[in-house]
Length: 289
Image 1 (tube, helix red, strand yellow):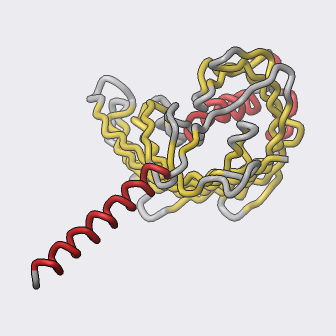
Image 2: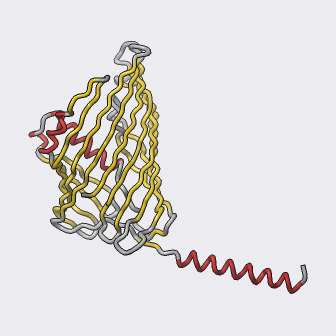
Image 3: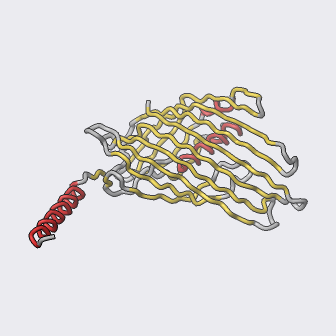
């Protein structure tokens, strides 16, 4: 290569690098955050499908399967708010579903009792929930109270949480929190829940939607010895999700996630060890009404 050609090649290279840097610097960024207005009311329809398969060393080879499907219409009312967070009241205007237990399907009658349920909770502008509690819990029957408590606990599992800084398309962030996994027999075990988010698409126009994708994961590997009924628990959870969010209104438009939880629980109770294996598949889709 001649000297003049080499100089020209270097000049073109510098020009291309400069343009790439300028394009990167010009990449638009937005800060995603929830917005709250006192007295504001919004509703979401939530369709869920939960499948559980269990085996036990008590009866080797026997598999027990339960499938629950539900549709809830959740209403969120902003009671009060400040610059950072809001006090919300959650209620259900619709709650119906079915349970298939070993091939026998029946209506999930206990879901109807959720219509009496009120949940108070705080949510900050990043999307994190805290201080969830039932209102008038003593007036609920045990089944409805259990459903409401599980729903309150599930808020943090499936929440869309932002990092509190401007984001460009393609940027990633991670949120970690301690949660209780919905595994029968191991409800008192806490897992370190990790959600890796990615801003896949910016709004195409004012009033448009941002697309956020997510990957969920958690592990529990705990041995309690022989002092308690549960000797050890080994559980893994993983899943994916997708959310659409309007930055101009600060509201969730839609969301969906699929989660698989699998593990083994060993029990003692002072006698022979009993091993239970559980596989759970959860699917949920939320849409603003």
